[in-house]
Amino acid sequence: VTISGMQLVVTCPEGAKPGAVVKIRPPAALVFEVVVPQGIEPGFPFPLLADGVRVQVSCPRNAKPGMKIRFNLPKVLLQQNEEKASEVTKLRNSFDKDGWSRTIRVSDMKFQWVRLDSTGNIDTGTRFDSKNSAYVRDMEILDGDDASVHLCKGEISLIAANAQNAVIDSAVIDPNTGNEIISYADIAAAQIMDYEDKAQWFLDMCQRLSTHWEEGHIGLALRRDYLLYDSMNSVLSLPKDAFQKTWRFEFIGEAGLDAGGLTREWFQLVTEQLFDPDLGLWVQSEDNQMLMDINPASEWCCPDDHLRMFRFLGRVMGKAIFDGQLVSGHMIPTLYKYLLSWPVMFADLKDADEMLYNNLSKLLDMEPDTIEYLCLDFTVVEEAMGATQTIDLIPNGSDVETTAENLPEYLEANFMHRMLGRVKPQARELILGFLDVIPEALLSVFDYQELELLMCGLPNIDMEDWKANTEYTGTLLGCGMEHDVIRWWWEVVEEYDDEMKSRLLQFVTATSGVPSRGFGYLQGNDGNIMKFTIMGVEKEGFPQAHTCFNRIDFPMYKSKKDLKEKLTVAITMVSTGFDLE
Image (tube, rainbow, N blue to C red; front, side, top):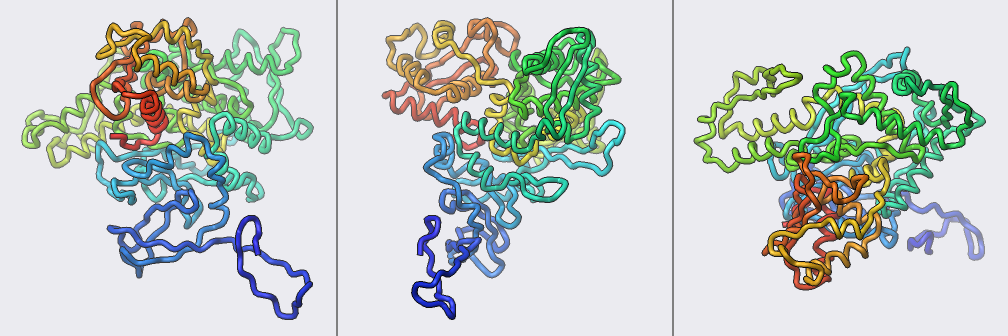
């Protein structure tokens, strides 16, 4: 018989006869047979594609490479319709080596990241590797809420992306009843959608989680002159279930009924003030003036309230995307990755602090026996508000000399400190506030570039302004629109939809944001005008971006088809960590 597209062999029950009606319950799992790959030892995990779904299974204790094994997979894992997958998803699925990929762990139905090596097997290496190691944000929620302000406590850290505890749920569970509200099948189906369908699905799921107006809503009466502090005190006093209710705003002393306009104004005004560098919570990124980074010295600027403000901002950002509102501030890519528990790698350090990245990279190129003569130890010296302090990167770091043998640990310690350590309290509160509103499983449908688009909106891109304010260097210096490569470039970009145009901007400038005055006011890492630049290079392969300079190094392709294919792969795979070389 065929049931829901599945061909099944059934046995006629005893006592049944031709013409009788019998009930058949399809199996909850399907049986797969696979050959254990070379290099896989008993008990080790390995990935495979089952009907287009990447899953992670463990090699049985009594098996060895070359043997055929059978295992069951829940049917729910295999309900993704590959025909409905977005072009981005299909492209990513076609790259299955040399990079990090999210899998579903069959043993407990948790999402987990794995790194696939050059043979397509799982890389189980644990020592720091500047090219391959990746880390994800881990948040341990501590017991005991502050009942007076409804704020939970937690500890944040970076852990190896392939650690056994580096997982997130694949379904949304009602904390009160334990019932499944949004299933793995719902989430898996959304993960392969294009961005616009994915964003609409997300809003639909938020509506499913929301409380009906008749069952409760929130009214906030605020003084416009004290908007930030009135809002912070009100929002931080709310229990978590209040974020699933409809909010309505009133500005004290002003006539007006909030039919949605005051809500949009509130999100805009509050996030503008919180991201304003003059407040002291955020600073412009050292390498991209359009992006905001957490100020390590925020405590000096707001000694009494800086952590409460970060918790407040996290809740506001979460409520904004829950309600389909926008946030007035673009953060550095790393922070979007932390919100999603998306892998960060040593290469991400280049976007956060290019000088430190270059200095650490030079150590990798030095002769091993010369490193100890640099007299480095496991400390860093930092300056805040005119005062300097020496910080141990590991316990008693000042007593540990850096040598060729412990260089990987030295690089890892510097990476950990720069990426999280120096702003750990602020990042902890920001993420805790965000997760007060949005379940982690629901966020798993987005990559970090899509999360920026969801928070800040798709940019309104003026193609003529973009063309007029693009510079050409390298082998394209002095060339105009009559050059084949330049002409093909703009034809391809204009063929892209809004999502792909935004991803291209993110690839080259690190953000989807466009200056309010247009492309002519793009800034570089030094704060000066640095226009979008296409640099022609005499090499084969994929384009390479330099976000500090708003520049893309672009090979001189021989056809428009090759150009489009390589450019599309580059801007699509940038978020995965796959090696395109």
